[in-house]
Length: 365
Ligand SMILES: Nc1nc2c(ncn2[C@@H]2O[C@H](COP(=O)(O)OP(=O)(O)OP(=O)(O)O)[C@@H](O)[C@H]2O)c(=O)[nH]1
Ligand SMILES: [Zn+2]
Image (spheres, protein in one colour):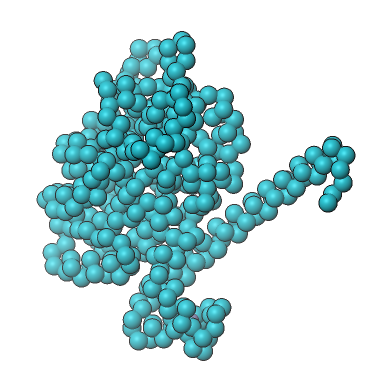
């Protein structure tokens, strides 16, 4: 079995970063100490070299993850080893690392990368969920997370067939919630909008689908694949003892081109790590805030507050201001945690430096 890597998203840009004498491959799944990879000559299980293990011990962000492009080296005994993770263009990180670490493979020693090199982030929110309508607050949060990853968010209002009338009104509200983000209505059941979704994957782009349980994510992947990938992805593979174990495929190539990454971690991803993502989602409020009389206006009744004025004029929904406040608090809390860690790291670094100086007989400058 051979693979055309360009269909998996391999580009000349990435090829330029491949170390000489190594073979490129994309990670389709990770296990402890090894990854399943797809190379041009087929699928392999590749163990990590000492170099990769050392880097990961120093910072878990350096661990290979689903979607990574990696460099393999061929061993004389006839198997590949995974020797390097190529720079990531985007990354979903759990645990307090921001975009600055993407590509540089450096973090604060706490992060874990859930998926890498994701181009498109579909935020799936059902038009109706049990007896509730689409949750605009959840869309805001997931769109913020999408921006934070470095990928491009696209909001999908799923199960659009459950909405009789008023779908256009709902889509308008959603567009107001996520300025500058493409919004589609999708019904996998009727096939409505599925082509629009597929168009975002043109050029072998990689996507994830975020959204609550029951949003119709699996059904959508099936619709994209024109068959039941999600059922058939429970492929049975013989393990070393000849037993059959169920292997869940996490990097799913679609027949029409493009890939979807679907891992338990990505399914559970919630509200970690929002910094600049919040500002992008709430660009309307940020713009208003710039017109407040005081630069440090808290929008709590200060004179000349443009935010509250917009609220009074009915131009800014109360709900939206409240979600913004909530996200601001969460982002501040996340930042305080990260700052505490950074301070500690700085201290440790300083300790090492002074120790080295003492050893070399120099005193502090
Ligand atoms: N009416 C309607 N129902 C749908 C549609 N898409 C999915 N469903 C139904 O919604 C339910 C949940 O769909 P799933 O695809 O399993 O949802 P999911 O997001 O993958 O859920 P988790 O696996 O729990 O994360 C199933 O009963 C589907 O049949 C749709 O377009 N319209
Ligand atoms: Zn104000």
